[in-house]
Amino acid sequence: TPEKLSDEHRLMAQTTDEFVEGELLPALEGLERKDWDLARALLRRAGDLGLLGIVVAEEYGGLDLDKASSLVVVERIARSASFATTFGGQANLCILPLVMFGTPAQKHQYLPKLVTGELVGAYALSESGSGSDALAAKTRATRQSDGTWVLNGEKMWISNGGFADVIIVFAKVDGEHFTAFIVERSFPGVSSGKEEHKMGLHGSSTTPIILQDAQVPADNVLGEIGKGHKVALNTLNYGRFSLGAMCVGGCRGAIGDAAKYAAQRRQFGQPIASFGAIKHKLGEMIARTYAAESLNYRTAGLIDDTLAVAPSDGAAVARAFEEFAVEASIAKVVGSETLDYVLDENVQIHGGN
Image 1 (cartoon, rainbow, N blue to C red):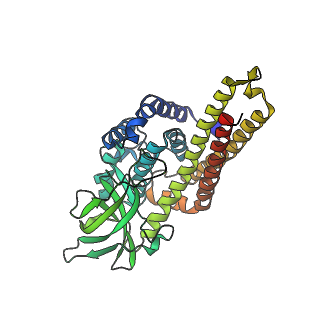
Image 2 (tube, helix red, strand yellow):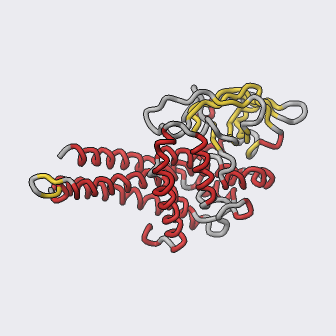
Image 3 (cartoon, rainbow, N blue to C red):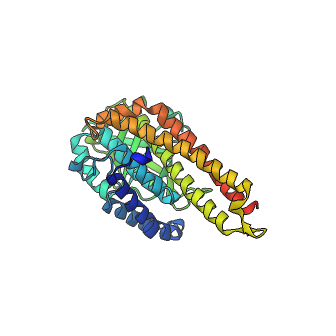
């Protein structure tokens, strides 16, 4: 539970809050203008503060902390929703699969610079004809006579796609064996498409990743050939768990905004916070958020108990998120629906009185 957070957890929360208040929120306008140099600088700053390496072993530059620490950080990063997407693409979708499935050589090559934010990461799974049905992907990987790989295909809706340096890409070897690859933007044949026109999250980059005879070294297979579904699904299990916590963070921000407005807005000679209807709205927002928060922390506690012996063992982390896949999915659904409710009630408190 949040009440059982350690002093270390609370210090991490304070550090993240100060980063969000002092550096992220003032930068929102620049991010909305798609200033990706600014986004990269903010990732570097997050790296300096240790926020990108929560789940990474110390030998690769991380902090090797528990999953409750991850919740503490992402809940607070969520207040800057666009940057939270950038952050998640880095810390959850690129760093985590390397932690779980990378070889020691791959981890030494990529994790230290991803943890500091010197390199920006992304995760390329979806295609125009395969979203939830990821194994229907058409991107192909062909092994060359010298052991290297050539990838061809187009990935869609990739967070950080416009400026990522390292991309976890999924392709079918010989059109059949679904496999994960570590692909660098600098490799020949790798490029980004145009930024998507989105309804929200305008301060995050979302583009296609285009692979035209992209040349990938032999050693850049992530995990085993034909076992890419293990990489994809366990990464997404963690991502869903993290998104649930981000939704709780968004709820907390909206509740604070609504409560402040209700205390200041006066009608009939008194603050609207004194009206029964407004009290009911605030109470219901808080109750639902409490339930979602409890779900997230309970799940984090269960995962941390499972990993107590080897918290940074990649294979153990993968097994834990496979075991708690259902809870992670529930966290995302409950968090999303709770946030939707809380934001709607916040709008009503501001405009419906």
